[in-house]
Length: 241
Image 1 (cartoon, rainbow, N blue to C red):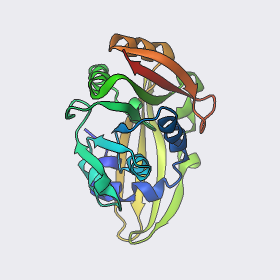
Image 2: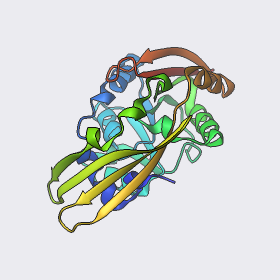
Image 3: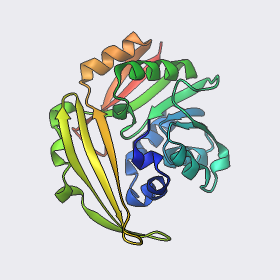
């Protein structure tokens, strides 16, 4: 099940305006160019920002996400016809021979169930050509990122064309390592509606991730730093064995 911030139509529609700075995707765009990838699978594509950036560069892209509302937003964007959109997860893929599979932002951490995580890694591997790469990021648990997830740090008011003013903030709910749960709240000034979305992320240790990858048929080629969050995240590059 997708979190409401992705699966609720009203929240999916404002996801991009609430998070307009996607400079975190620059590193993935550079890696796609570095690896010469011509077919890319974007797992957890959400509203399609990264998939459409890739398509703008002439790459053959498949974007998959379990949230129908987010896929609907992606499909409504200019140029969306250049991407193959699938509502589902990495076990719902057609036959592919992708050069690169990606899970950007929180996607890997949002897969909290160990069995689902293993199935996702297997699904990505099956979609890759021999020697293809899986790239994703995950926060370093030692940095305790959740300690900053407070209303004080996240509160903002955003004026969205066609929607009006929206108040939003995040609040930490529970820390039960390796799981961390937080709640996002949205208040629509136009009609006073208040919507909330609870999200749980799994904070995996580097060694755990590397073991999972090897077990599912990958060779861990590199673990890089995240340029947008230096010293706070691991970026895994794993090649299909």
